[in-house]
Image (tube, rainbow, N blue to C red; front, side, top):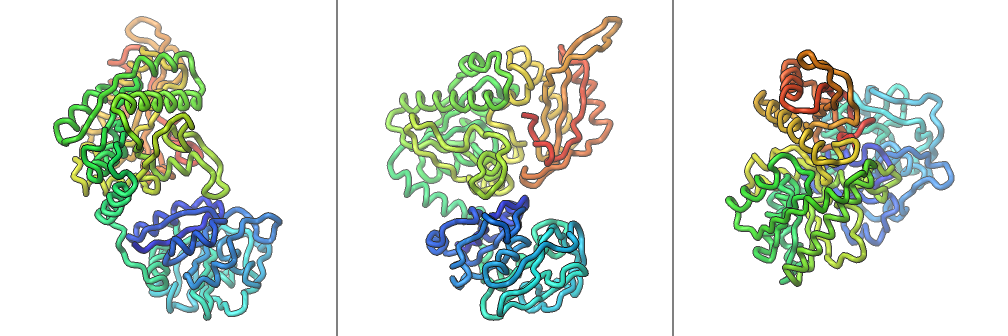
Length: 510
């Protein structure tokens, strides 16, 4: 399968580049800027994209790739900082721009033969840079300019090396997808073969090769990721898979019951149902710090799995539905990016755990997993479910977790989702849920004064969870949800709606 390698220099848009390439039905892989040259050769990508980044190439310690990539014969596209890397390493000059350029600009095309083929003479692009190329390396020529950047796009006559000062991956660049498509197809000669069916075939082969005749435990919560992972692995190893559903006590209303019934009824799958809710809740008692909650749940989850594996005997592999955004938010090894929060199923397993890890979706985005799920025949009821965090309702209670608070939150959350479904907009929303705040306020019910909890409603729209906008829900819907929660959920007298986008906020509150 053809692939494009993206070297990450710490840009906020790196993962967006990966998504745009995949939207062209070509596999993209992101690695750190210093990914070893020998591994690049072994990977054999059809093209390399150098991302943007916050650094200046002329500063000491600036992130730079192995210079040998420019003589490898592999086509290269540098974006913003990536263009400056090309110029800097190949003998050009990069200096501080006399005028910074952030926002929209008009790109005037001077050469439309390859990278800028059929994008029009003038188009809107998105600029975000304080440095600029002031002298091109030998053999390079400008192919486009803007009013503020005489060198807005370049190419090498001798090699298939291109660079753009703007960001084609963002929606603000009107022909950005076409530009990336020109690089991927016209320059690199990739085939558009990144399809769910192809992914399934390659994953099945890989899993079969790794697992052999050994047994696999799959953590199956019932959400999209774990459900698709379970069925993908089942296709590879059949009855060697032991899917395990653990009730951790912090799931939504009737979640465990519904998950078990659905998979037992619709699929011939080894499903072990373990009710460990008492253990989880006991360990969470009195804990308010969100990171501690996540670690307690993650560690307890692993302990329970170890016990199940021991009971099943001779289990060698643990499968999880880890996604790319989970990896990005949990680790900083994919470039100089800040760690946001820990995901309980990401970042390595404790040394005491003797199971090897299988994460078939570690490089996939949520919408890609959904496409794989549809190809595997999973119902829309499961495929269209909103994401649900591994630590469950524990990170939607912004205080200590108790049975009473869980009951309040479960009821409020169920009302919210039920009304969204009735209104017909559930599929238009990336994620919607209720949060129980550690805030009690004065209210009046009947003729009596109340002092009860506040529920915050959160609903966002997004493509992949990396960025998100708050959903502008109809007022009449919000009014109905608020009225129902206050009237039907004992212990709540106030409902608020979160209108924060990601960034600067995260989707979950903890």
